[in-house]
Length: 151
Image (cartoon, rainbow, N blue to C red):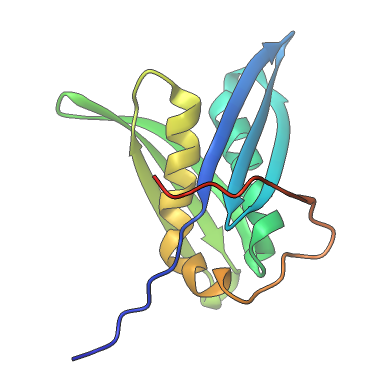
């Protein structure tokens, strides 16, 4: 029987975005084992989904080492039967050694939360080995957060 490695995944604490004139401003807070990180982004209003995705990616970079090589490729809303989805694609590395990562989330009442969930869905398997015992990327902002029981 093979052993199973179980890690606690990153958790979304808050997703906020607003229209500020002709721009969309987004802020996403993530936590992992009592550590918090916040990402922020500002893009043209029509790119509000990308602003939320960029803010999520920035928060991930603050908590997980080695994510600086990941870049946002695209964010799309897709209809699949009666269930609208958000699909996020990310690129990792360049050239022949590069690869694509993708994540999806059901588009519910709050599209911002769906975008953040899709980013994490695309990154989860790739970042899980980096979560334990790793240090965040240089220059990342993290703050201690309250330790909450899972659930």
